[in-house]
Image (spheres, helix red, strand yellow):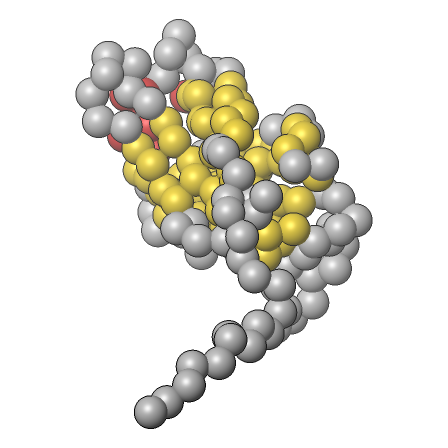
Length: 154
């Protein structure tokens, strides 16, 4: 006969995740934004889960992006770490297929200004988010609307 012991917990249990919060970002005049690799357009800061964030959109991609691809960066601008699951969603104006990229799990965002080689930084990159030519078909009156969905542990 065997006796099962209570589980031994190491670290904090993950807990339940919060509901998704959705922040729509409007990049007006997307077709006219610079398409030079490495040149980005930063959103204003927005607040989520007590942290300040911004998204930097690279219409021509980052230096590591494939040609013709748009890149995005989500960055924590707060002096504290946080783990969030996130996704970007761009809805087609006629209800056709949406474009979505997701982390698929909780990701750690370090405090702003703490990035060092080999460590987790305050930002997460999507170097090859989508083809720019595809995104031009998703504009609403010339505006690219990117929804930033985020959730964290309760």
